[in-house]
Image (cartoon, rainbow, N blue to C red; front, side):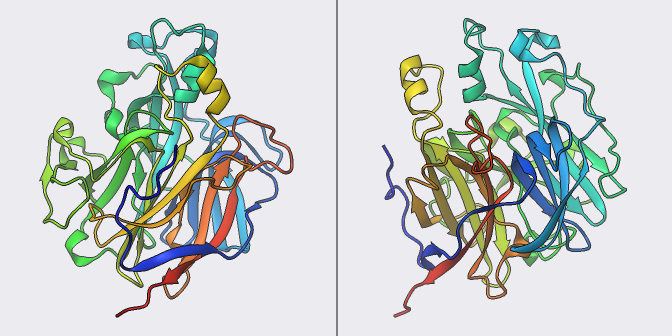
Length: 386
């Protein structure tokens, strides 16, 4: 089922090794945890579905972290009271404009002292499957980025918040970018290589949250993030297999992937390792691709039972991508997902760091569950240069 040889191996790193066990931050009970580095060097994380530190359950939260694991602090800033969901699709209440949507937050971005957060929808309108919502829920088909909200008071309040009636015709970005994650650089979005400076960059998989086919890349001028007409989309050839000059288009539907891995790409994230001038791409996938064509007996048997971790590296955000690490049974018996490497948590030499991830969303959420803010340290294995 899993294939570790579908990418060429890295010539920069000889794999990696875990140097600690996985640990859950006490009091957390949420998942996802997209991140961005604030201007003061602290990290904002946005998470979904759950509760932290004994507070009430909500579908979205904003956390702030200072320090570096294992000696770091994590506190909740807000649960986004400005964001109001439409009627819950689990009770079969249609969203306006013909969709059933579950609204969440994903990509976070700090540019100078302004914080942006992407609000996105899953598209749960699947004719004929209204009575099997659990299957729809597990597939979680991409809808789109509804809007980018922003805060100028360190996340206490947000502006540009969409109402629950905003539907697909008004989306900021379409389904190829619904899982938006901004590429991580330095504090306040600084420290970019010279040929990338002046822009912010975001990536997403397609299809659904757990088992998409491609990764797509977009960018916007750092001073025009909210101007949809200023956004551009990668449309170079090769799907990340060879080096090439930058190629962009203003047409979202003309975008081409920076990586292809059919049926295996869960929400991807990317970090810039300044010490080595390399980009680190991480994603996970479920054991069996999640599609509505899957036999119900098969998805009940195999989904959420085992996940795969892939880590790739490249000299630029569009590749060429080479495999660093592949684990076909990542964190088994837990089902881990959404691996990320915050840039402030990289080791000083750029040859290791701390990964943050989540897990076990459909299982027991007790004290041994990975449904929370999980961290684990790794080190790259050095290749012997000849």
